[in-house]
Length: 200
Image (tube, rainbow, N blue to C red; front, side, top):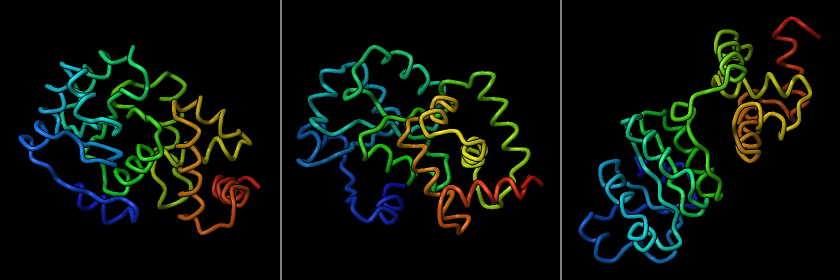
């Protein structure tokens, strides 16, 4: 998985380190992220001082399959400051989604997958509507949600609050939407959306 992500992000070098080596030396100098498999990451989470010591300046990322385990860890870390927070990487995601999420983590942002926190009623309604009525082929359900709100004239901050995302993540989605639709800007993307909805 890391090799695939590394091949998609040109400025990231990936290196696999055995657990015994990591226990002895910690993260390599200059590392920005340390990705743990879920069992080892969960055990390190029990001793935050040790995890902090081993990771140094690098942000810890938990690559997980077990949503319940990840939910428990997320719930228990709520009081920690953001630089110490574990990032959560669901490895069942498609590669393009993993790449996008890793880019968010590399920028210093924290984005928690909706499957770990659930959605508000408003978020769930927006998600279902976007999933059922995807007006522009090739967009993910999340991108459709973002485009739906952008087409209503909502600003990035408002979209971020409505969907439980950071503004940086909304900007990333807008960038991806523009590229996928082959349009020049946000306004053209919104126009395409409105036309697909049968409204001009």
